[in-house]
Image (cartoon, rainbow, N blue to C red; front, side, top):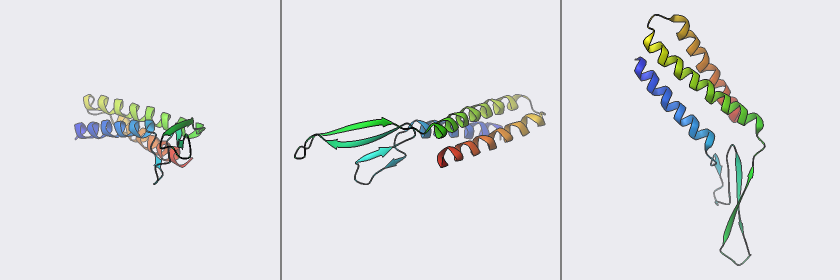
Length: 116
């Protein structure tokens, strides 16, 4: 059971990393722009009759969301480390409660990073 929990935590850490680093949180139906946590990209034609398109990307000023997402990722990493330690320390209840508390905190931080 503990190995299963560690595998789930590793998978959630991988998905969290993908979610933080991707620039395609939102993409328009016409493929004119896409937006992520770090950048927003617009597709612009060089001339009105040309089919040549140039993508221009600008940094996003989402400092709150970026900080919350990075801190949630770090806290989720700490929860993974504590779960690995718990695998070798069988009778440590405080470690179990601390891991659960840290997981709840990281979930709250991830949710709030997507809301703000």
